[in-house]
Image (spheres, rainbow, N blue to C red):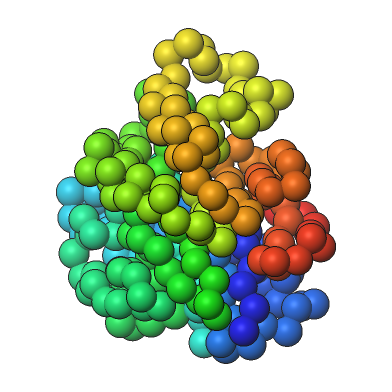
Length: 250
């Protein structure tokens, strides 16, 4: 079994098909998406499959035709919560189940699409994976829809911090600790003084008190090796436990 990690998809799953062309995924492999996958998000009213956010946000309304056809050939996708999608536990039609010793949410017709629960630890091949998604949407004033629970609340933060006294092999988050924010990637179109950085501040606290082997994050739409223990991913896929990084075009 091999675990891979990729950055934000935002509903464009062509990079997964590109990866499929030169990586022979096995059914038992796991591909982790680091938030803002584009699933469980309300598509534009003019697009096929539009559904009002006042109703259920099933993933089938967001899956493009290509991804839908390839689901049977894909490994398990473990999807971290981003800031541009609904939390699976708030969406009708999801079931909660135990997977690798942690809770995930799944719609049974898409049984290999698993949505991680923030604060859970998954044990995969004797390695532990701690997950904490969410971030602040700087563009919410320009969006028709956004989610009030986009950031981890105090209950989630407490759940995550319960693990600081043990070693974690891999940490999967959507955004990054405050001290690692790639300032060169901040959008000039938005007043950064108005950005709520409470999640980054919380992850700073986690970073300072957690013993881990490696961590991965997305959110900032860049590929950056922050240090020997931390990678921000976007136009690349990384094999967990391997320093090799595979680049592709989105």
